Image (cartoon, rainbow, N blue to C red; front, top):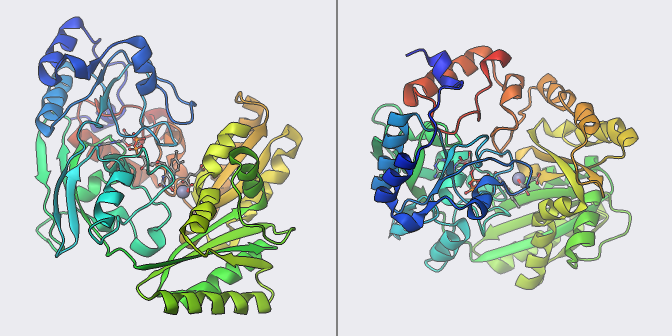
Amino acid sequence: VDTRVSAAPAAAYSELTELDVQHFTTVVGGSNVITDEAALEHYNTDWMRKYRGKSRLALRPGSTTEVSRILAHCNERRLPIVPQGGNTGLVGGSVPVDDEVVLSLGRMNRVLAMDEHAGNLVCEAGCVLETLQEYVWKRGYTMPLDLGAKGSCQIGGNIATNAGGLRFLRYGSLHGSVLGLEVVLADGTVLDNLTALRKDNTGYDLKQLFIGSEGTLGVVTGCAIALPRAPTSVQLAFLGLSSFDAVLACFGAAKRDLGEVLSAVEFLDAESYELVNRHLGGRPPPLAPGSRHYMLLELSGSRAEHDQAKLSGFLEHVMAEGLVADGTIAQDQAQSQGIWRVREGITSALGKEGAVYKYDVSIPLAELYTLCEVMRARLEAHGALVTGFGHLGDGNLHLNIYTPGRFNKDPAVLAAIEPFVYEWIAERRGSISAEHGLGVMKPAFLRMSKSESMIELMRGIKGLLDPKGILNPYKVLPPLSHS
Ligand code: FAD
Ligand code: 2HG
Ligand code: ZN
């Protein structure tokens, strides 16, 4: 197999024919074969309405066997195919680039088993994250991840993107929480590794390859996930600070004083706060005017009085020290939800403001916000504004550049951002994608975070698992001319 060629498919695909559509109809049934142009719009367009494909066919399989039969046919016929979960991805990975078939996993939404002794859940890939959260919470457990898109994103999509989110600081990566996977390979082979064992050192841990592979190596159809116990006490503080140095000092103090119960450390700047206020009409808690940065500190534990006392003691301490200008502790669930709405609403608010240029980066903490300042100065002349927020506790900044009132992308703005932003990150050995993945947005810049030998090995793996390059083409791996 010439992996270099097959990993970056050229024009080697077949045209979809009426016979193909008929074949798929026998596999999934007529009502799950979507060919209507208007109905296809939903499958062709991403969450941000930034990426749009031209697929003429979306399929909605209801079982692993159906996924396997679909892939076997696509492989045989060289028909490219894009796995799609909740379609909330932010790098254009979930929609076709051209006329690829869309494989929508939403019908595969059954919980298969839950072990309440060991604390794990086995389910199909199309289960919506929030539905799973409600299911396990009722039984005394919590999902090990949470994110703003929880109402639409699917666990298969979370695994395919190795989503991080709001509780990564506490529960870690899906590389640790996913215990087993069922994956259908490009040729239709079902790789059954759907065990829920905590420990299993029998050879290479193949499931890890598919976590974060963005649908380019296989289709996740089922998963087993380790569940932490649900906390019985959750406390949330919202803090206003006057500088990013104060944010860093406060984070250090929180790790020192609250470390064993900390479950989230998030931050946003004043621009993000104002955007949410303006567009979502939330009522964020009034804090001291003049705060330049805001932090959310969440504690999850099992003794409310103990955690409350710790948090209010901490707040008094950091305010007395002058690190925190103002702060409030949520008194009930409604207040807590109001605060989380501010943090989780930023992405939606940005979309209402104008065109948005999104960058999801890891850089050493000391320089995390410097990037926003550098970009602000650089973009001023273009009438573009800059906001920064993200998962402070994980060193993950969401840098968003936006043009108020101008909804069309401006090539001059883009040219002022790229490749500069990626080079700036590379100089600090950061990551050009901390949690959203590469999709179709970033493959050409993969070199900024990975060496040539690593990219070459990735191509080899792609060529081995998907020699005809049918799975999610043009995503993740750079085109050969860029390497
Ligand atoms: P999709 O968008 O449908 O697909 C994403 C990628 O995974 C695509 O490449 C697709 O081909 C592939 N894929 C999907 N399902 C499968 C499958 N079953 N098998 C194989 N490949 C598959 N991300 C974070 O990491 N942290 C956050 O905090 C976060 N917050 C967000 C907040 C908002 C408001 C929004 C809109 C997005 C956010 N995201 C976040 C990005 C996104 O929600 C995540 O990437 C999520 O994990 C995608 O899940 P999905 O089901 O929507 O996948
Ligand atoms: C978040 O943490 C998401 O809210 C989205 O990852 C980030 O919109 C973004 O840039
Ligand atoms: Zn995020």
